Image (cartoon, rainbow, N blue to C red; front, top):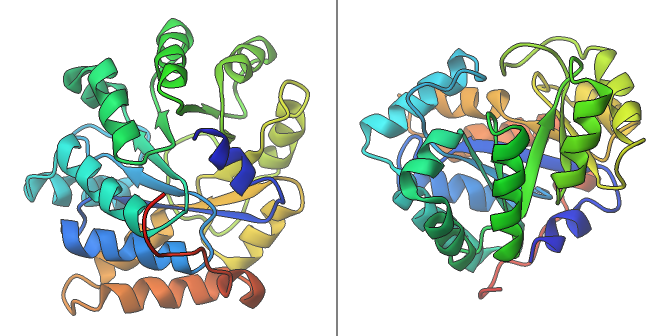
Length: 271
């Protein structure tokens, strides 16, 4: 099952959207994910709400808090994922901090996530021995550990991270927290080239990607572009009017070339 992620990104020009599960509520969150699956998503990152998201900017922090205020916890995230996986063939990656996973229980979580149709887990703050152990347990359940690397990651750590990673490598385009940005740092291309020395896995670039120009620029040197804060900001902007799906769809029209946006995954039945 974990190989589905790599296969989905094998041809390049990948699009990986991030949404916070349960924002603005469970039902609309699920519909947003289905929309993204039908509008060209290669992989969907489903964010686990967390009270102290240190690597996230204010937009995603607020979305996480909205979901927590709605009572969203990891079990409800798994429920959303299960409903999505029964309606779409797009691989799903849980995006989480380590603390919620440990509270749930790693073995129990991996079993539940596998049953829910989840293909991998990305943990922002699992490093070294913690990442190695998590990778081992995930592999036992046929899921991938998705790892983050940044421009400040040393070659020695890059090699170790790539050794334990599966699915794809998430290359952070800039130091700091998530958030839409008007320009893409040249560090992202340099980092991608360095990572390719240590792995044959697809490389996705994220943090700060919010325009079609940035997406197409990333596609020149990496296998996929990750878009998070820009999508979450549209969800937030739609809160008052309640036209969330329309907001998100309009953003996808702006982000992706027509041939990519028009690409759909089969959405019927289960895996």
